[in-house]
Image (cartoon, rainbow, N blue to C red; front, side, top):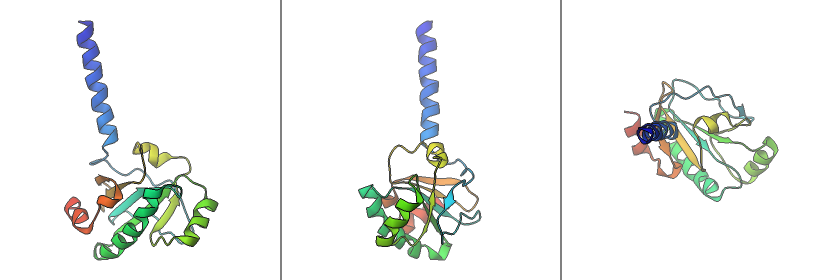
Length: 153
């Protein structure tokens, strides 16, 4: 009997962990972040890509050009892209002087959103529909206009 209870607890814990790690279908929590100067804050009513990144992360730096291009490719659907980092404003501002980021950048200082999405590695992105529901999650390099349109259907 004890083994049966133990097994039931393990299955329940696994289910809860899986739900937490896959945010698709959940709602975006309030964007309690600090936007850097010139950034457009998240706007409900528009689709958005929320990307978690850092200046010290080589794959994150590689995805910046891809996200810049994606922003232009998806201008017809008014796609917002917001890059979130846990780093301080001085570090990010210095980095942006040598790296063009055409999308909004914000600081997730208290790691509220990265904890909410249980971000385990970066870069990591979520695609949010105009109603604020997460429709896709994964590596931002996997996103393209077709994938965005399909996820937003």
